[in-house]
Image (cartoon, rainbow, N blue to C red; front, top):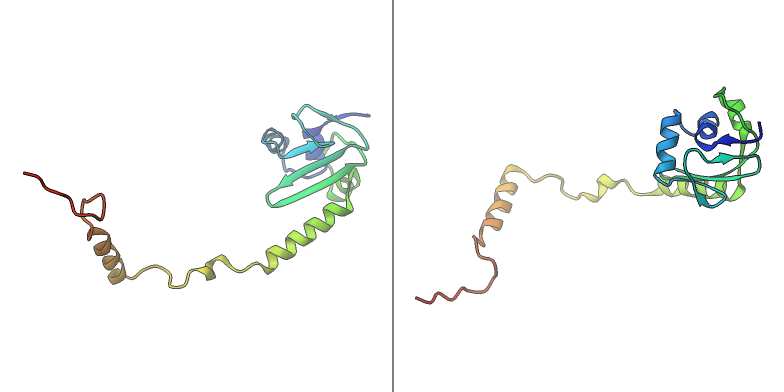
Length: 140
């Protein structure tokens, strides 16, 4: 076997749990072969460079083997080799996520109390139905 569909290879290499998921990700433009966007039926061969995005993680791998069946993880890892630049970028992204502040800490006071909610509502109702802050001229 010297060529294999990209969706089948991604499934066999355990990047995606099902071929359907692999096909959907390819259709969304999250997979490239040799720098070009592809369709699920695109065939890959040994030596091709595959770039794929899984959530926040972007990986670049070189195809080292082809398999039409999904096997255990150690066998699947022999089908590709991740590039050193990709490994370094993944590690840096993981470190940035680890050091990033907790989003919930940005909320200083949390939800308003019942009293605070009423004050907010009263402040919004203060303008009434007027569309601007200027006084309306009433000509009779």
